[in-house]
View 1 (tube, rainbow, N blue to C red):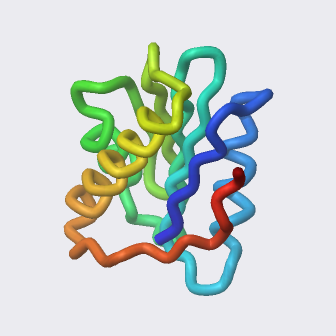
View 2: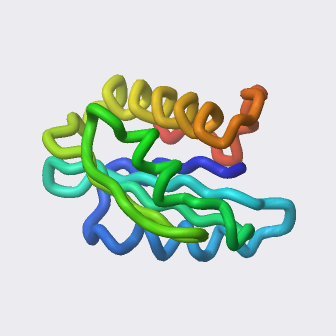
View 3: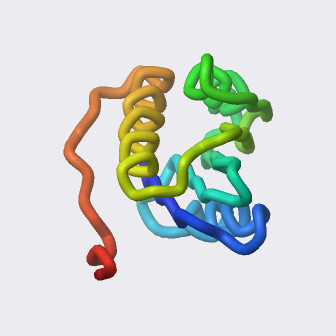
Length: 119
């Protein structure tokens, strides 16, 4: 499982493009990506399994927050009027990650940060 947040992005397609790329990395079975674009949080999910039912998974994740859809291996969504500040972005990451683990019926495990925080 790999979760990333690009924060503010210049084009909404960047999230899906990076999710596609990261899914090809060794050991990655699921990718959840997000980025903030003009007041809207853009979400993209990818999976290796054909029967992952990501459309249902992402709808469970954004319930009460936004809209989403998809099918087997690919899904996307939006959360409108989302703050771009660090606190709002971190809280959203945590919430969506918890909901993702729950929707996939997986036990949460501590994550590993892949990149250092920028100052």
